[in-house]
Length: 128
Image (cartoon, rainbow, N blue to C red; front, side, top):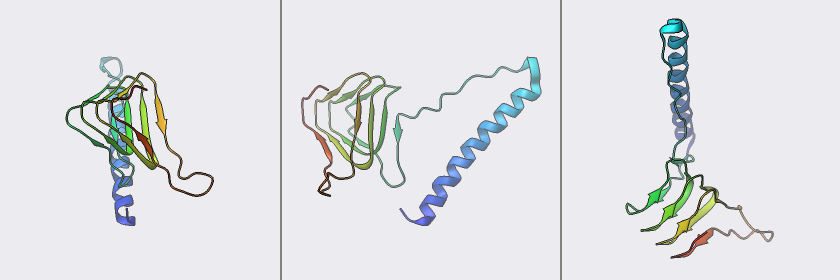
């Protein structure tokens, strides 16, 4: 992603933060008459600059799970509560019919000790 893309990405983050700050200020100014609902900032799918998760339409991702960056998930797969698939420095591929159970963390290394790039590949019909 080029410099312009990073600037736009940063501007989007700043605009979101500004909106939340205005909401907090308005609630503060209303005093006792204000009702402030706590918003969850959790996002199930999150890109990292130009690395965007690619998920088949026929999968389940729990509301509190996180799929981040360069991650591809095949059909009939499920990612359960509290699980994190973090493809930030390398890619993660999950095959079809695979079950990533509760609170599982799948992360990747940029390369092995020899410098060879090794993505994480989880096969089909696997339970982790």
